[in-house]
Image (cartoon, rainbow, N blue to C red; front, side, top):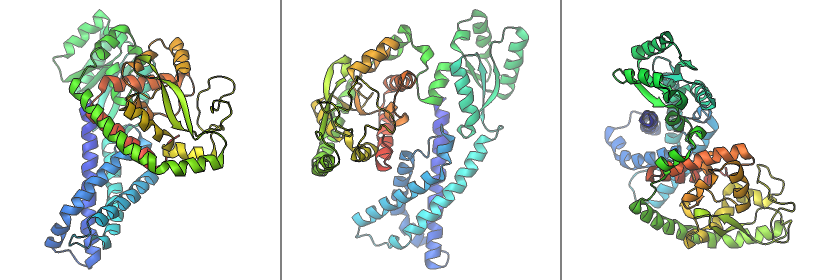
Length: 450
């Protein structure tokens, strides 16, 4: 079902590109106070098309194509911020290409204003179109559990995703109940999302088998849960599932190429680290007492403990420079232990920059589950026996959970983090890695770190 989601994203991106092309035309119209000559428009098109593609990339980084969050897709302040960033990037491109024969600097502002305005209009039409029940993909939910209820809630609150709840039934036990829901499904098509508990029932299996010869698509609730949330459903946690989905992680070409990418980004981050070190060191010392760096034990690949290096962002309350005086404590949002300058370091993610040393050393990879403290790992493993599965791959500077979730301050949020991490481990690919990198850049640029 993921291809349906990708298709909607592609449609939305195509609408944005069309809006920018139209915006360029009308910008030229306003520039010359007449309909632009086709040659003039075409002469501007190559460079501006390149810029528009960059804008689409910036849109993606800003989350404007994340259809799982309806508020994000309609968040006008974020669109305005994105337009401002796009404008700045376009100016930089023109500055780096001063020898072109065009005069785009006089029409760039108009193109941004008009292009993103047309994009807003097309986005409103897109949301209205795909929220209409006759165009949304009908979903039939069969079964009852907390994950099914969560999915139903997501579908009902996010019509722009292009799904709708056609029917839901907790447990069809009679032939008439099955006939009712299967007849409706056959008439309109769509997807039948069945809970894992019902799928194990012999009578249900026979009913589902008969549907294989119709236009009804059958999908397990665990698979649809991944599509909607980007997480692995907790109900699948079992030795059998882990052996089947996480047992074969050896991808030699992918792994070797990732190591080269780690070195490449490690060198770039190290250069940035050296450049910014004097400023961070001075401001850290001016705003609080204690060391500039903070070194802490973290659990790495296969649970091996290593020393993680960060800029200190909290008050040094203990003799070792840490902010803990009464045992291990989860970090939390708006933590009063964070210094004034530390808040800036965290929001900009600059506090993570010294980890380039861990990256070059091989303790970390660029993308993977964020490394946790051994003490917290022990606590969480006692509560969640499968928590240690996060360590079957190398931890990363950034990761899927890091860009999708905020702080994990309790057992419930730690379980959600584990779901994200297992989703990444199960679905590791270059496409997912690139998506995480772009989302991370967006968090850094917009100062959304915590």
